[in-house]
Image 1 (cartoon, rainbow, N blue to C red):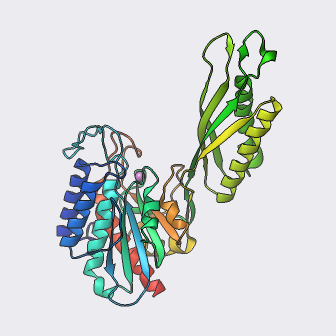
Image 2 (image 1 turned 90 degrees about the horizontal axis):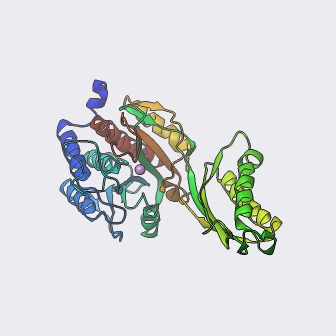
Image 3 (image 1 turned 180 degrees about the horizontal axis):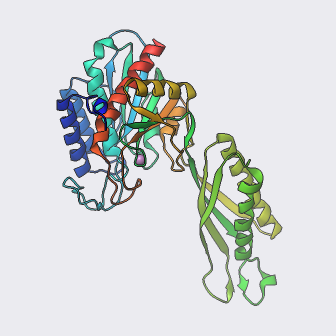
Length: 386
Ligand code: NI
């Protein structure tokens, strides 16, 4: 790391941020149970003189910096929940809670947003509007963003910026890309109706196993025949259950799986074709099928103007903006983007393991440049919109 990056945050704040991240890491809390984490954030912000905004959230918290004069509102969002994973890092500050771990680095995101809050507080008189800080609960369950939106915390917001650590990017780099960056992650459950009979007399029944097998095969043609080769989608059937005995044709077959996509039009077309194929194949075999969607978050699609502004903010700090490879994981940040233009950026953390791994860890030297970047982009977006 260059000296430029190490001087972006003062030594005292830098030490405080490392301490707070280690404290959060020791005490991971699952989605919608982030009570201690919320209190840690509240007391730290209060100590720093940052005002807590009055939105009713059971866990999570909204705060504000700036607003000393009329002006736009820019939101910054970090998530804060952990995962039901047993930590295996051997760190001195490893999780003290059995079977719970900050294995996606949301402790880091919370810390980075606290750092940005402190930096913005130092420059409060220069801010050309208000920065709303969203500490969002329950990202891992993809329900927290909805809770925040329902609390009214997006009212008046002109743009929102979200962050996620990225193990494959080195410390000091910021992954910025306009357009799709994280996938829509939908689930499905298909129940194929059969008519039971003796295995030796199939003509007396309707075999749901044969029907389900043809459905699985026919679904494979959707991505290859209905999606442009220049776009992408994935359909994976990951479970297929049927039958109870070797000599009985069963009453039903159930198949589950997931559909991943980036482009909203591709997504809706694939979902439509999926339904047609399931019903059409079932009808061809003289039966019916029911289909239940488990709607995941939509894709995260970044605003192009915000992406350009973020690149300018990064380079003004001497940080290296890179174009990241999109991820097929889902992110409920997409919910905010239904309401306001949004940008989801990746923060380089030089990690050795991918997200959700029991040995997941990140380089703490990523905290300072990430906090400095987040403060800088907020300040820039306000100035551009004032
Ligand atoms: Ni995550």
